[in-house]
Length: 357
Image 1: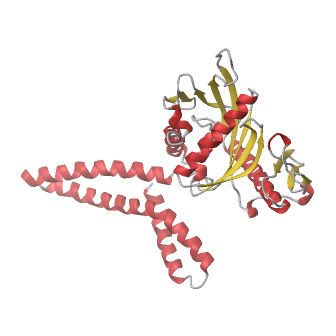
Image 2: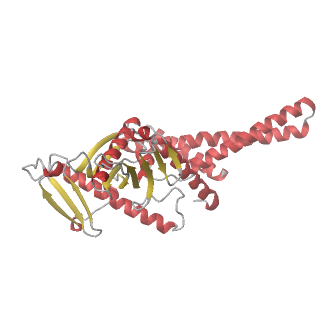
């Protein structure tokens, strides 16, 4: 690990030198400053670690030539240095483990009603509210891209963006099937119904990362409509894009202009294609490296919301909260997300230590 740290320290010094000589190239200055900022926490720990190693060697030498009270003091100092060394090594390993490159990106979230009819559509609305509340708590900005309402307060599907540093690092764990168990308002016998909703979380991508040839897409325009087909607009502003190679279809109708809807739809399409390529790349790297916290695939049931028991259970980490209201209001959602982050970090660290990845 020491060789790796020396390399990082050398690169950090090079960044300082380049920043001092960058001149009027503001774009390059911004890129170098960001890289330096990202490295600074590791560099601070690396410097302390090297200092610790030096002091440890000096203290061991002192122990060899000391006796009496000075010997006891040196032994106490050595114990403290070795304890701190272990702490620093753990911190450095966690910093050196490669992060998901998408973690700092904005996200596009798609929520769709699954089994359960109108009740599933109502739960889409509940999850949308939960995510918007959670985003507000963490000071992320949100915007609805498209919504297909059921007319009774629910949605067949809804797509929205969440913008802010680290948005993907939190919301990525929400991908999968969410199951709800509760008595619908329309249920006269008081029977509990089970419904499902799928959530897909996509990292937003830059235009230069995904190139889509015009020959690969078909674009249709149509009139936007409100809930249940009401409030049909006179102008053809809604846009539907069909990506022929994959069969992916994206529609957007919430913006007032056709151009804005087209840009929105293309953004979602690129995010989906990026996600497909990332999943393919990961599986090719190592098909056996399946996260203990789940793959995030839509077919995977990740969480159950049991209203009669006021219990929410995340099946990937076997953690439950009995504060249903807190979870649905967003402020208790970190009970699961932070545990999932810890589990992901632990697995990355285990892989890093076992095979150096």
